[in-house]
Structure formats: structure tokens, C-alpha cells
Length: 303
Image (tube, rainbow, N blue to C red; front, side):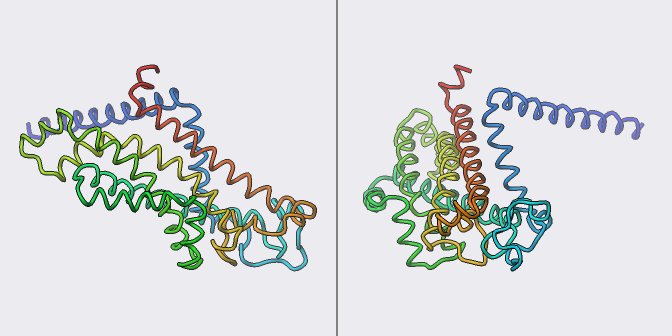
């Protein structure tokens, strides 16, 4: 009897699990049908991430070792995307550059969005002196263009991957803080927040359970939008000599050279990393648009 009782229970649990998996797959298919361009963006970012993560296994050559007999070698069977001024394989450097550029892109955007969200929510919810001081600091940071501020911070900290992430993440903080603060101010005196206070919810519980979920959609849009922007700004820092340094590889560093020489002698050296940056920025923007449409109630009603 015991075995007979356990068998239907196991079958019931298995059926429930299969039903949940089918429901999840159906939701994914629905999202893909509703947002085909967003799906394209997500696939492109996944491919770029895959190439960066598995670069040591996918790259045909060492990205830091050149062939003195193959300087500016055009694309061929041996070097599929050609070589650079030091005879280094462009494909290998492109794969390793994806790792560096995406680490900086994801790291800087997450750093800026997380810290900016914390400043914005705390200032909007509690107000008082913290809000006044933090907003004046945010105003001071917003007075500088993003690239100029990142260049100044990078010059002070020095060129390295961590420092570039910090330099590109700090300018995002005030831009995110403004949006998080505005969303918090609009929710702070709503009925359900007052009801949560009346039932004895602590401030931290209200922030994490009621305010943050209601502004999460806007924050996800900001994160995906700044991913592409940060990669472009990182390439600009590399070109100006304040970003990633040799022999490390990044897409921006691959394009930093004599424009005349690269355009006339070896255009493939800049074309392929430029296309990688273009595709990544386009993919992040398409994904951001899909996230915005999915989280925007007005857009959801129109779909």
C-alpha cells in the first residue's frame, strides 16, 4: 500500500513540474512573438557573451603574440579576419576584446544603476538633509558630459579594467538617481504605501517590497540602454589613451591607431571591431525597447 501511495504522489509531482516547464516555455515563446526585435537583440548579446567567455577555446591564436612575417596581413585562410600592425590575429583579439568590452559594459552599467537607484530611492523616500545633499552632488556630476567626466576620473585612477568600470559607472549614477527619485516620489504617498505603513511594515520592507518592484521596469530600460553607451564610451577612452592598455585587448583599443594608415593600408583592422561595437549597441537598444514595452502598462494594453 505504501508503494502504491508513493507512486501516484511521484507521478503528480512530475506532472506538476512538466506543466510548470511548459508554462514557462509558452511564456518565452509569447514574449519572442511579441518582441521579435528584442529577441534579436538578446540573441546577439548572448552570442557576443558566448564568444567572450569561451575566447580561450575559440580563438585560433594567442591575441598578444604577433607574426613578424604577417604584418597587416589581409583576411585569408590562415588569418580569417587578417592581422594588425604587430602581426596579431584580428579574430583572436576580437574574441578576447569581447570579454573586456562586455565586462566593462555590464560592470559600469550595473555599478551606475545600482548606486544611482539606492541614492534616488533613499532621497525620494526619506527626503530631508540626505535628499538635499545628494541631489546637489548629482547636479554637480550632471554638469559634466559623460565622456569628459569619465576621462577625468580615469586620468586620476589610472588605466585598468576596474578603474575604467568605475570611471564609466560614476557618470551613470546621477542619471539613474533622478529617475529612481522621481518614481519614488510618485509612489511615496499612494494609498497602498500608506496602507503598508498602517499595517506596521518597516521602511526597508516598503522600499524593497513595494517601491522597488514598481520602478524596476524603468531601471531595466536604463541598464540596457547604458550598456551600449558604455561600450562606445570605453572605445573612446581607449582611443584617447585613458582606457585599456596594451597588450590587453578590447574593441576600442583595436581601433586606436593612425586613421589614415588603417583606412588605406589595413581597413579590416577597424572594420571588424567597429561592426562588433555597432551590433552590440544596436542589440542593447533593441532589447531595451522590448523591456520598456513589456513593463510599460500603456504599451502592454496596446499589444
